[in-house]
Image (cartoon, rainbow, N blue to C red):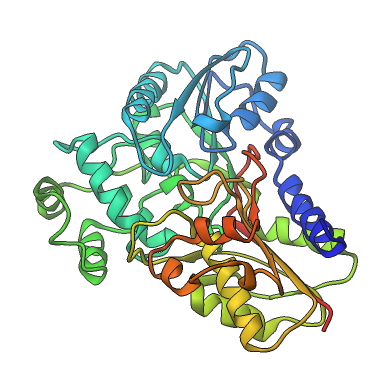
Length: 395
């Protein structure tokens, strides 16, 4: 590995470490009363629960996390569930969480992190898990941003959009929240189980029509969204943000020593994002965070970070850049339904890839990066604060 690649990985790892769930939770526990129940949900759930159980020994705890992070934890009932596509294991875990919320004999401590939306599917009304899986699969390739997808998901769920509060009532809920959402909207993180809904059924319908999905979703979902239902009056919760994408970018900047930070989160379509990054890059080190989107048009394998890395390589070549390296990756260590966190590319990458245009048209970024030996594979990191990027450019 050359020096620039090694430096880029070191800076990225500093951003991941800044979102360490054990440390993030520990800093806030002295200010909390002992809970009657601990419920941890999301990709960082195990580490968050570990910290809380060390501090509050003997409290019953449920952990729901993705398969890669679902190691046993003393004192906790650990559930492994599907992500990004919900599965039956997640549906069973949701029932266990609902039962625990009803059974709590006092305050509930909720530990929320990104990924909780898919990991905890609790179909609302007459909907089935199959209905939710079908909608989620369509949303993932729709080009809608994470907040728009979560608005829709909330309307189809018994736990999202304040469901924890409804099932825990009258017991109070305190939530420590690790954000994977650009802008840190607490109602959007894990689809807001401890926060009032971010929208309405009418807005969900409008978004589905905007993305040309209304006629593709199951009839049961259309019936559910158009039904006349009373709006529940939810109790308040104490929601505390303990880690975020912005904090991880700041940690990367500190690790870099001297760097230009793109001042606003990088979002939107990956091709547009690549142009923006290259427009704002400076000689030396440029850093950013955010979460882009991909519209699925093919049946290849990959994810938004892998596609963004390739588009940056294309854009850098178009501009005639030499002597540069770019790392783009998800802080959770997994990009889309692959084992890669993202990609790490440089001025030599494109020359190693045969027929890149065809691969990108088929959303086959994983195969493209594999040809160049440019996949970044870190393994599951145990946390999730969206995506991080590093560009080192030396002219």
